[in-house]
Image (cartoon, rainbow, N blue to C red; front, side, top):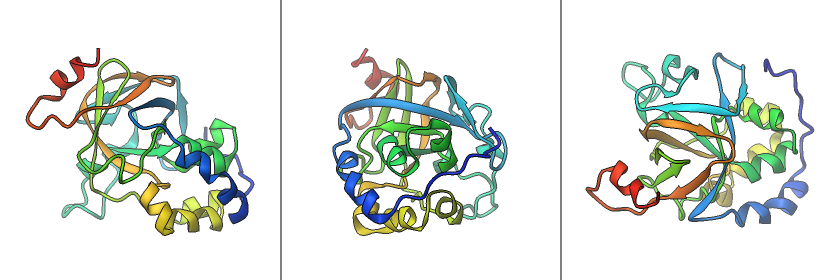
Length: 206
């Protein structure tokens, strides 16, 4: 998808009216609603299946070729391998068309509570049977492209106090255990067993 899609910009009133659905996002266990690969700038591929890799992030995504202003040598930031966003919020600002969701530019769209309270940095999520990702403390912020695609009011709400607390613009994560994932997979918040390898921690849920 080379992004010919345009989205009707929702008003602040429309967004606020539907925000209660985002606040009710599940904790503990949720769903991977959508997976999107970004092979090049402004190009999106909605995938039914994808592979997460410890070094490459999402296989075929352009993260590993994207320079970062947050690293000394402008190399891709290891704690920004994956951009994760709440699928309820994306549906609220973009409507039901999942190709329109992909314009947000995130790779993983979760029906899950991504708030700071629910998932502080260091929290780990199991996706499907084997994959594990870890929330990092690198902030995921809205940009000019987000405002252009979804409107100034959507951009304003992600920067509001509640928007930052709920992480409406999403969060950054890195791959801890690589594996195949697919849309519809269960997402589970793993217990914080300090010092226990992620693969052992995951095994208690299988």
